[in-house]
Amino acid sequence: MEQLKHECGVAMIRLLKPLKYYEEKYGTMQYALNKLYLLMEKQHNRGQEGAGLACVRLSAKPGDEYMFRERAAGATAITEVFNAVHTQQQHTQADEEGILPFIGELYMGHLRYSTTGKSGLDYIHPFLRRNNWRAKNLALCGNFNLTNVDEVFQRIVANGQHPRKYADTHIMLEQVGHRLDREVERVYNRCTAVGKTGLDLTHAIEERIDMANVLRTSSCYWDGGYVMCGVTGSGESFALRDPWGIRTAFWYQDDEIMVLASERPVIQTVLNVNIDDIHELQPGQALLTSQNGTIRLEQINQPQPKRACSFERIYFSRGSDQDIYRERKKLGEELMPAVMKAIEGDWQHTVFSYIPNTAETAYYGLCEAFEKAGYPIRREKVVHKDIKLRTFIAEGNSRNDLAAHVYDITYGSLEPYTDNLVIIDDSIVRGTTLRQSIIRILDRLHPKKTIILSSSPQIRYPDYYGIDMSSMEQFIAFKAALALLRERGMEHVMTQVYEACKAQVASDSDDMTNHVKEIYAPFTDEEVSAKMAELLTPENIGTQTEIIFQTCEGLRKACPEHTGDWYFTGDYPTRGGLRMLNRAFIEYYESNQK
Image (cartoon, rainbow, N blue to C red; front, top):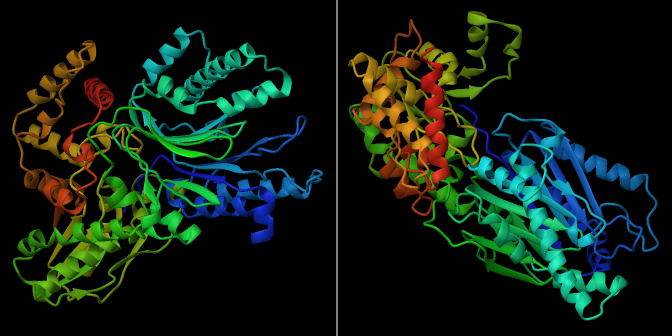
């Protein structure tokens, strides 16, 4: 019900044969450009605040453009980007080989969701660093959030660099660009030592660039979750995954093409290939493509215990992936015992439904679990999104009244005052939509009892690796725990946690503890859930409302390979995440003491 924003999706294409090959076989030199469009559209769910692409043409002659970029902001950015590309092609004369702008062998696409609040074209990937040497030109994009931007910034300033903006992508561009310059100079010195000059020197340098050197000397300082992608003007490309495997990337290669994307089914659909032929980029690993089209995997950073983001499985990634589909059904299945307890075994007088559409797969799993146990339950489409209302024209109670009409109900879908109603969602973060709309309109059906399910556990802690959940006060679980502390005269726990967080921030020690867990420690999960239900139920609601969350144990059963659960457990995989949690709690505490 509450849309979460995820930072970004990536797509890369490297053609492995001459451009004329694709024109002869597929009837167009735009084969790769068309595939990039599909890869980006199929990942539109990952970014609706902006999009961009970069293209490198390997066969360009001196004086001809060889590196192209186009970007746009807004929800229709993909369409705008490709319309702009086609417009340029229509108004530009082809070169002597019949090749138009944005036709090349190497492509990189990006879809953006901001977690920083910064917007506008200046923050849309790919970022571009220009130079008269082709090998020193660099375009960079990524699905990432760094948790130690301050440290990285100070490091590159200490090296004499002067970034144009204090933003993580700009800083990383300067850092990787600096190491690329050093790599080019290293190769330059070796080639001139054996007498290379002119274009022979240029070609010798480009043939000997080793991007693994560049990545090892720059990414070793990064703390956070990332898949970073880059292309150079001379035709080198890379995709690098963080050592903890927090962010995901998948790749495919045959004798014609190499493709990388943030999600596996996207590649399956766009290229019509089998799932077994698609590979996952491993933690700390880079997929490297040289100028001559040689593709290799290389371990850049030491892999850490894998903490792949579980929200990719619960919510973000497309449910068309066969493993994700099964996992989401399993998440619903795991809720069955708790639901049976909540309805006191009265399945004959219970109606099951779901909202939003992303929760549909978990709903199937829940229903199948009941039916396998011998309970032929009743399924109805009780709630559906009606219209997107423009509530900015109203204020206060009027705004809330309008918001209550964003969703609508199916009248007559249950027996008033007799049937229980079970509604499953995939996550509950802030609870705003529940309070302002869902619970209020469900009450119009007059169910005997309303049970709202979340297929994910209680979201208690901020995320700093790529989701827009970075402040404490937005979480309804956190608000519920604070309310319980106040009710039981335990406000001193807040002060103790504050002092402990301040002490850690002042210390340079790598030995860090999540003291915010102490806010929740006095209470059971059920107590926190009950308080959430109380806080989210509007006044004058006649129906009893209960909220049931997935357990962390149920999550692990459903998604055993994706153990990144810090938003639920507070077990951050990097010290940067804990450091930012300390700062967030300190900021919250101090702002509420004024």
